[in-house]
Image 1 (cartoon, rainbow, N blue to C red):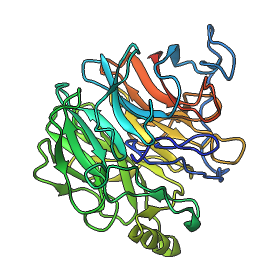
Image 2: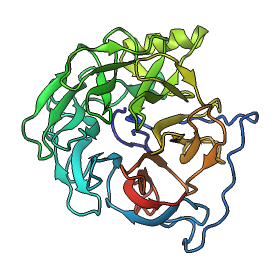
Image 3: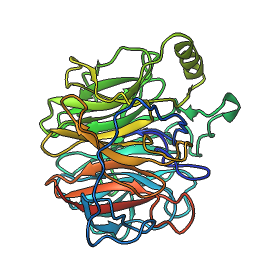
Image 4: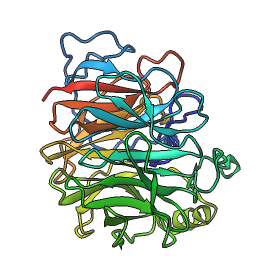
Length: 377
């Protein structure tokens, strides 16, 4: 994930995540199953501008869209609990791979939180706003880690040097929180600030774990072979939503072989939900596409997520935001229609705004920036 930020060589990059926190590069899924449910069509909204600009006439839930970042790769933007700040990962400035920054919810200067070394991903505010949680490889090496070995086909790197850290919003008081052998990343915090959910390979697979806010009392939540990640708590802290792929047969054998090389091949992923203690795990979506970055609506009744389900070009590069029932995954509704990449959605604490990452309005092809909009029910 969550793991490096959007890095699409031609068009977009997934991180770019997840999350979700989510994953490094955007999966190039090419299949769109004809048996999948059709997303609800959205009528045009008055006051929106031309297709390909900052807004789209069919985006009826989004109003007063504002672009917060300009240039480079910016993604996985998440609110502080007071709704005044946003933390994100970015290649802002001269950094060759993602670093963690904060920015005002109104835009303005980006301020570095991470060390400027290694690669970082998946930052998240503690509820009291006094600390930021993120993953970084800087503890092992100061340089950017090597990209994934594409001689294996299209794969993501699961960097074993990722560890989870906390720091003050100004970058001071940096402390390690989770440093098991292997990958530890994609961490987010419960609304009461008591629990952290994260993804780790500490037991030989990509599974979800919870730990106390100080890094103690680690408990494994998922056990099905495959990639479980990009998890977030519900507003009441009682449930966790995440993305997963549980391969079987030859696909499982290939997955396990690649994971031993710290690689994973992006195939179809679906949205899952479970109780905060790991019980009641169930699959919400069955649409056969690359679905990730799920997040609860403020009332906990729906899940917003990113998917290339509606990609009409068949290349899997066009990601949009969708929403489904948190109860059973029904009533899927499409939220964004802008060409390119729209992902990593998160509602503000008061539910009045949405922040997400998008290729829209980019000055160069594939540029990913952070946007905020008023949410219209």
